[in-house]
Length: 152
Image (cartoon, rainbow, N blue to C red; front, side, top):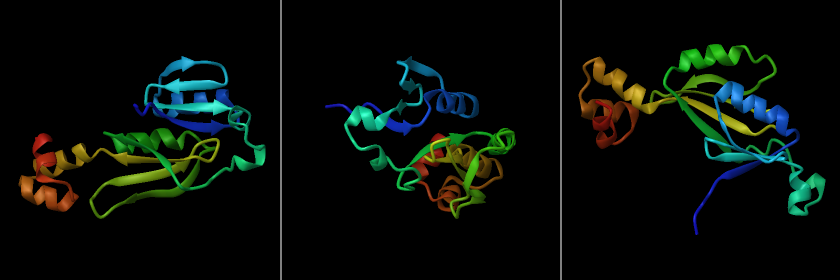
């Protein structure tokens, strides 16, 4: 058995496809009409209740119990890009975690949560460039020294 991808139920494949292509630079791998698979390893499905023989009302929005996770090298540039999408609803504004990663969470057009975080490799490189040792950087960003070492 092999895990293949995550599938998100969407109201409109076209609206969601445009959202993920434009904001996240996702490339369409397969476009089967009501089902679209993206290069990022997930798919969107219109008419999910029909597909799964479930009642329409059982497909709920905004369950807040899972998220898609993206990392970006230039967090500030992504925030500027995000500001051009006036209809995007924020789960929370940009914030910084104790491990020094800046993140923002938003909802997609169907209320699926998406986290966009600053690349941990970029953060490690920043601390190393400032003169911190591998061990100090690992402690600050709460990642193993082996990870920090690969970021040199």
